[in-house]
Length: 167
Figure (cartoon, rainbow, N blue to C red):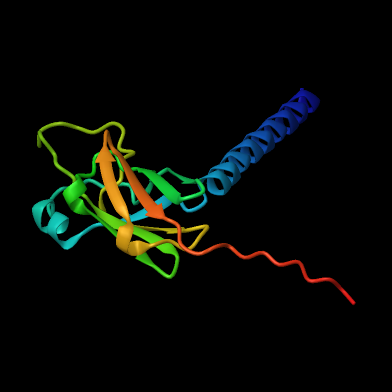
């Protein structure tokens, strides 16, 4: 009986170890694939005043997934910003980095309801995206459709690559 309990304990320990390793692997992949897509949301002063008495603890992190696409003439940046009004977004380019900032507002339609799952983050955020090429900020354009923001950035100058021979 004692041997079977010891074996059961070893099996449970082994399975817990495997579970922990799988969980850790999933987080490593999320962080590596997400690059900077995992974005921190901070509760804004307005949200605190509106929902100050609300006992909800909202998530502070969310994924603003994006893509950077490059052609001969331009850089295209696509960012998923679901639930965020275009009026609440701000795009800035500084030192070859695109900054997306804004705010996602929490609106509770029914105060008598109970949330069972709360995975969407709300509040102010900022995301920075390094650009792979110099761009003409004066000719930059942005559009917003179906929760996806697209920023078109014409390239300027050439990326100079020089091979230096060893002597």
